[in-house]
Length: 179
Image 1 (cartoon, rainbow, N blue to C red):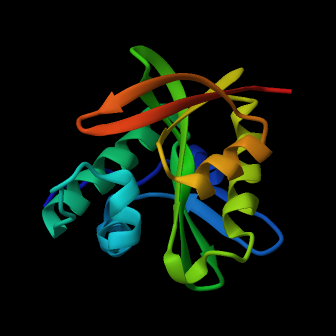
Image 2: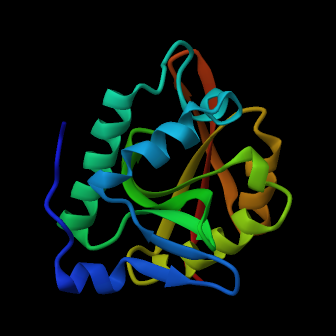
């Protein structure tokens, strides 16, 4: 099992965001179970994982450790979002390579049972508000055909800026400048 150290006091204070209905907190290495349930869902896995990539407990532990390490290194990153004690999904910022260039990328996924309630829009708005203190430009990479994700990003001011591939999958690259 991969274990990352707990967040420092300074990072822990920055790690939680509250909106009207949601609480978003930093992903920790202890969140492997949440990640496995979320990304193990076939409806989510279809959009976020290359064909044939499964979400095993070992993979979830590795991803949780990486996301926790990002928080430790940078003081910001992906958050798990909850409505009360129910997991809504994940949304946050991360370093990534988009279109061959290093970027701050927004990434998100919402549990199928929690969709259609405005949770993704609410979490995305909170993450974008936070992004102004991190990067002037935020990128996104979306698998072509993921109409709900594209519509949400476009409604938040993202515009298409290129195309790419992730193995067999065609991607649209989108960008948003801080207001």
